[in-house]
Image (cartoon, rainbow, N blue to C red; front, side, top):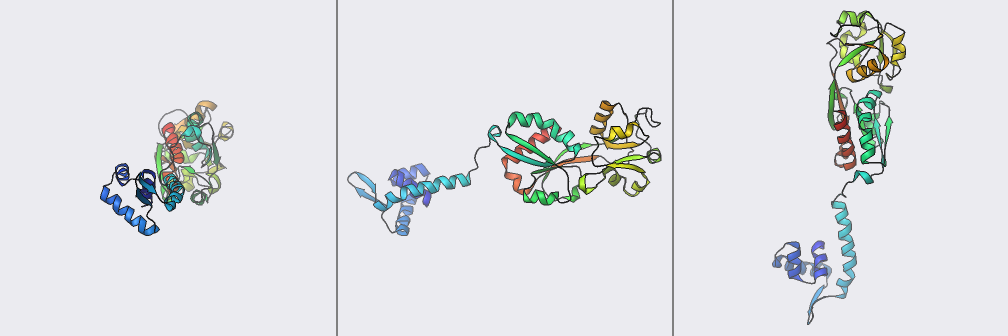
Length: 290
């Protein structure tokens, strides 16, 4: 009714209003009659010079047009342009997520949205609550899917490999390590942030106690220094293991087949499903880590 009133006040014509709104003339006439009743004013009166607005109608022109403009802004989302976006996105991630998901996309993020900042925060036991409160925008996760109930997007699946010093007794063949040989040597474990989740331990299940851990790290970038002077093994997702073996001169073997692949995902809160900026970033991260 208010939209019809706005056009009636602009055109001062039932026929013109019907044409502009795509309605029939009788429909607009009925609307005008109802508006006159509601507002207790004729609104439009016929004169020798055509239909003219009453004094009450003249006073309504500005407020009604302002109402239409504000309502339109509420109902129609503004067009999204990454190059004008100024925003800091907070992403919870491990160093493996940074290496495989965020780092490959960073140049594209900067190119498309120069004013965007990525703030990477560590995993924590309350990160799902932080996602719900808006304290973080996205989670890059390889944790078991049953630990969350929010929307997610599959990124990739990665197998595991063992890295060790050159000259290690297990170095050489490209076949998966036999499980008994895997358990016979000491290990350096990697745990995820404050949650202390060991992905390898989780995948070994009931046999995890057979793995002898000599050191644990909350990140794996310091691992080469520990491996170089010991006989310990370190089991990492293949993308990270291959990178470290190549850059630090380490030997590499496929992990025992009992260690299931790692499924990596991107998580966000349901309220972000219609946030064009968050979905733009999610698409960019997914595309560049593929």
